[in-house]
Length: 280
Length: 298
Image 1: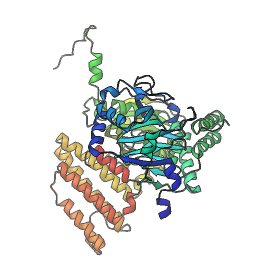
Image 2 (image 1 turned 120 degrees about the vertical axis):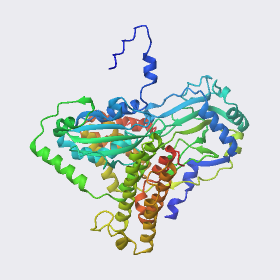
Image 3 (image 1 turned 90 degrees about the vertical axis):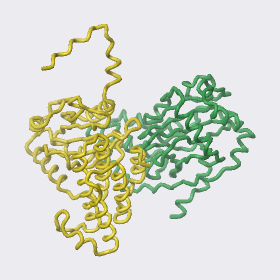
């Protein structure tokens, strides 16, 4: 049991705590993020439930509304020019920024199990998170382990591992997310990595749990609540440890069982896309 | 006798003003309506209460009657918590409403987060076969009416049995804890509105729920009615005596509570639950944290 609660070495490769940030600095960063006139955009619709909004602080164009990330040498957006504390922190870190965003995840919103960076150039890059406003029901799941990214630290996430994020109950979770290229400044920052203190291994899914959840989804679907049925299965990823892609397979099975071959095919394709698998 | 208001001249641009002054609950009402109407099992949607009568304030709940084909009532009830959690944004499973009048169905109250606020959504599930009768008893605005497929006598009987069984089922400790959380929201609303008499009644309901929680945890097989024989059945162990001491503290508080009294009662009940039936809190810790955040208790 203790072994299950203790973060594994493999987990440390997926998510880690880096440098501590001064509490008063976090307060001022949070104030800027919560009061900025941000143009939030709902990009990456296939990856989310709705309710995941981003706005750019550094990107290729300088336009805060341009939020679909890509390889570039990032420059400050007009939004960052009105956020001097945030701009100062980013400058002090001295990293080679590819893209920097504020990400707002509303209550009852999810980023489904997925991998990132598949569409980008094959160069070494890393993702840093600075939680600015969060709550205990907002967490990341990677490798069957639940990690609440607590405030006060810079976090490193390796998003090429399958992962998902949720904010079950709210209020809003707001993170600063910086995608950075590997360089000496990054190596110095990452050299002080600690395993997450708040990691919690999810219970392994039993046949009984899967059967019960599948039956509940089937009831919703049979009543006509197809989206809710799909979301009920997608949420399993945040409750129990499952082999990669299982939730997508369950949804495909749900549609097959209801004789809906087109929806089954759609979710099989979605699984390949979200998890960056070879086409089925 | 009031005279009718003259029609506004066409050049007056009142649309934006009307939009700015529409009830804050309207987007939530719309979202829940759209969600519920997605099922062909839903035959009717009525909105009741202040949103129907045009007297809503910013604290008003969203109060629906949902007509369900008799054939589907049991499945619908069974799926309601999942639906409201996934698609409705409910913080907690629904509380089986004991305040609502008996209109031939089953009432549930959900606490839903909406745009950073906690809102109360009341759903009264009524078999389609009983909707005409219900509409003669209660006022409400009809939002949806679909002629149901044929309802057989067997389906009507099946729905009636389901309602009777659901209403007669004893409440679990978790359900009784949720009852406290819902009643505390109602009480905060009464206090802010200055509704002292209603606050008095709901404060008594809260104490009764505390008594029921203690009995469900420590005397589940009790054959005594209501408040009778509590000392004899419960105050025979240290944990029983401490729970009854908490109940005593609750019933000797002021008859009409303040906000602080309600918050203290909630703290007391959560501590009591941790001591007497900790399993009732399983899976609710984050929900209670969120609940307190939304209520600005934390």
